[in-house]
Length: 245
Image (tube, rainbow, N blue to C red; front, side, top):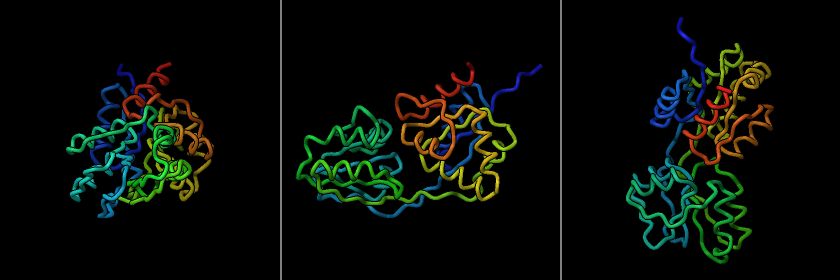
């Protein structure tokens, strides 16, 4: 008799990140349900080059800036996490600062003692946390934000909502606050919000970091797993270990 493998939903942009996430889950012995809750709309912009520090917050932002020919010569380049730092290095950029804690708050804490009076450029999506801008301004920096891309909900998203309603999800992995919000928005539009959230709460829910956890819990979703680092493979492994228990 063939043992049924647990089904785990994953919410990533419908590009190589979703493909990689599905492959990771398959390698860990579960049936992945890829539900692309995000799509990227490039803004055709680049980070300003007249700042003392420039902050990149995602692999997507790095790739878009590089494609536009961005040159950060003479600027201190900061990456909010390892995946962003890796993307910068792969694109040929030097990385000067990566905070120990891969969050907006972690980067604010890392820079707070040295940016009073400095010009900082924050280049990211249109859904970036206010924590970064507010924290750097409070530290005395002159902060400018450039929107490199917009994050929208793609057509066809939401297969996981129906699976949650029917009780056919064993796990769900949210990789940003926006993926949580889009899941709940779809459920609300379909008139099944309470049932979808109940289905999630009967499953193992993992979020990639504390901000995503806070968003989920504020919307009534119980979070079981948050990895030590904001890394998808860590999230997947931690959730499946919890599921096995």
